[in-house]
Image 1 (cartoon, rainbow, N blue to C red):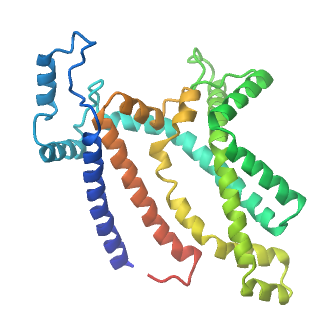
Image 2: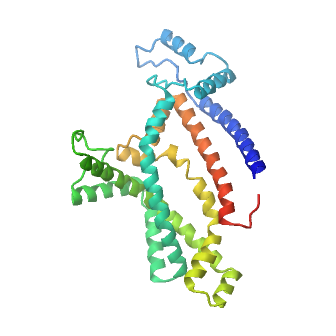
Length: 319
């Protein structure tokens, strides 16, 4: 067990090193320079450009820039080129904003997808299966921005509550129950919107995986022995159908840092997705590279957790 963990950690550190090199090269090979003179901005003089290049080591070779950047990153000295604020502080602030959105959406997705998919597999070809299939493909086909505006219109007209932003402006002195309910109202709609597509896709995966397992010999043998249908479906079939979803569960961790640009933009939610998008538009390389590095760390951490969860789901797997 310890040897497996040690090998896995070393492999992921090496992978992370190469990911950092590739992402750094791709960012700097993109067209345009962050320090180039803007002819439309008279304040952006060549002297300012020269000071900017020296301050952020842009006048040095690329490999030296790489070493300087990750030195500053690991020591917490990396600052944004756009506003000269600490990159880690900005990411942490946006991370705390995206975290409740991610948690609520993930809980809704995984809580509803499995019952819907399992019931569709059990009653394959029936009315319930056809209805869930229709609505799943409908939710997959509807563009997220269109569905968001439809939900906003329905909720605002039906319940007369604000849904834009993280909180209603001007409620700073209101009693705490009102503040809590206001925050819940603002959190609920973007979370539900983010979960609808996930429910539609994940429930289809659950259905197909359950159908594949239900056709195995050991499931037919369990039925032939006279075991209750619930025990056959949920103890014998479901547990063996969970293995692919362990991998999927480990790969949802990057959602913590990635966020959703469309949802956050429509609902004016100051999350990670909007920050990364704005950094790309502004050519704020420190923010882009830091977000990419943290995302790579979360991906590798998720795969490592998945490797360990395999043992819990399938006892036949041995390290």
